[in-house]
Length: 462
Image (cartoon, rainbow, N blue to C red; front, top):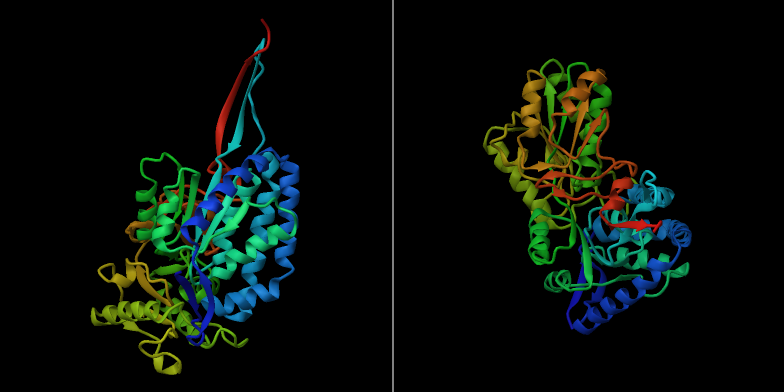
């Protein structure tokens, strides 16, 4: 029987080992989910929400344990790890808060002799495929609304974060969720692809790479099922001439380097108006030099390792290639003792003299590096922001709200921020354009992707 092994990026030790599900176990989980979903769908919404709230509380009560596991599985510094647990609670609670209104029947104007309305019905069994970089936050976006809408859920987590799937299911099981409504499966890539093709699966929510999203689309092709894809990003920030400089520096640098840059909506390229450019670069470099690269379990660490040494070496190659093409690297890796080739520990890097002929400005880095490019005006900045195959989020820094809104309307992205970045407000639709995916999670609109409309047209007078 095959196994998955979670190798901790902290020290290269094996942190978790699990057996992969067998074919018979997968079929049993499918059958159990399909049967349980029928009863769950008939459970009144108020009861489903009540169970959801109890599960949120049970999950939150284990914050310290969950944070430590997260630290060891994927390398989040322990000083920040608990923030993801709180983010999970925020998003899950909001989706519970709006469930009644979001799932309410759509009532149509009265028509003599007729009753007409549209009801939102669950799709059936939903497969949620979650990544390692924000394993709880990405999963909850789909899991909580799917369950509250009356679907059963099978959760497949990254091999890097298997305990996250187990802990989420445990929280719901502890509070009385009917057996089979929410299950996890540890799967190989091949078995995941086959599961997508199973007739019982009626929705797939995938968060991950563009090639991974393409696999999901291929596997689901011809099945006519609902598919939600949240894929890569190369998210830009534009600092206008009227921006609050100190705020723009602090916010964009945090957006670029938090989680060691391993965020699909992290800032990966910054465009700064020429009047602020020199001061912005000076302050940004000074700020980055204060990061402490170290073991994730050290409370003093502000920048942990990347998830794998291969990921760090990929970013190193991007940086080295950009420097060979004329970019200026402002951070000396020698100042970060743990940084060395072949190591998951990678020093942060700020690059200037960059342009879009460099991979570091066009290809997703997913690491602690950011390129800063000078622009002469809004039009040049807008053209560069949109010069990407991705379109997840973008940020504008300006004191002029009206002008920023006019620019934001022309930015090709699912979310545009003003004077902030790298945050998912659960009241807003989380979606992307171009290669950043399709579909939507969170907000009332997120429920639309986890239900199907059913129309009722009753002639009541004969």
